Length: 318
Image (cartoon, rainbow, N blue to C red; front, side, top):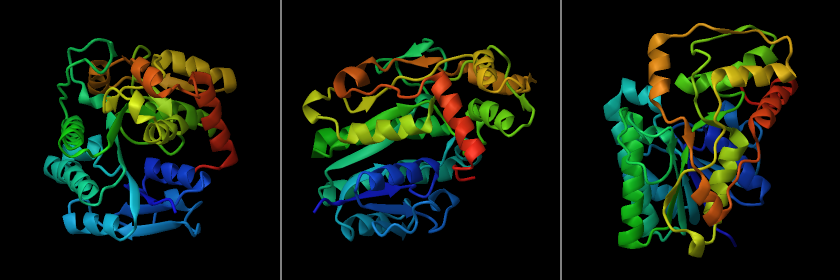
């Protein structure tokens, strides 16, 4: 029988969607998180192939037990403190994101887990970079979240070369969905959500800001398809992927194609705009396509339409 998938951070926005995808594919899933209840898993919590384990990534014994006791074959290590939280508490971010990743990799080594999938981020790149970044661009992150993700990438590569742990990672841009309403890049979602709900959206960016993003289904597909990619075709452990890259004005115009009455106002916050303008404007996903076939299934207009449909149908978990 196929072993189970362990998803750390499995009760969060992305982890819950990965769980749903794996259950739809007929696999078994163990969610590992600090709580056992979440609004994000309401649509799957009754599935008998789903198990929830309460634990903390900072606690090595709890991570070990979750892997040992559940016949884990693959770990999707999505648990982390995100950017805003990491800036508020850098020490906690280090303990969760760095020590937690070490605990996961060590558990994978000890119990011969077949694969560890790790989401990294475009935030691993800092200032002074090309507008379009590929895997060769040097990483100099200027926030704690980016720093911890670089360390996670390097730890994973070390465990791959030293111990043969099958570590695979993909760097994400902003992820768009009707559930994403907080964070500096959340305007990419809110610009669709608010008009779809019949409300005026007053965004904190200016028309020229360009923040790359992808729809949540493409993020899930990237993680799952990387897990099943042919090892013989992979020439690296960490990949950039194809993204949607457009200005805020271009996104607003696209929204109005589907919602002609949409009211979107630009009220730029200087600090927010400065930070966003320092980020990479686009990612080069050529190697991910060449080596494991990843391409976006949702372009700009498909993403907008999908989010509008979810908002109108009330099919998302809010």
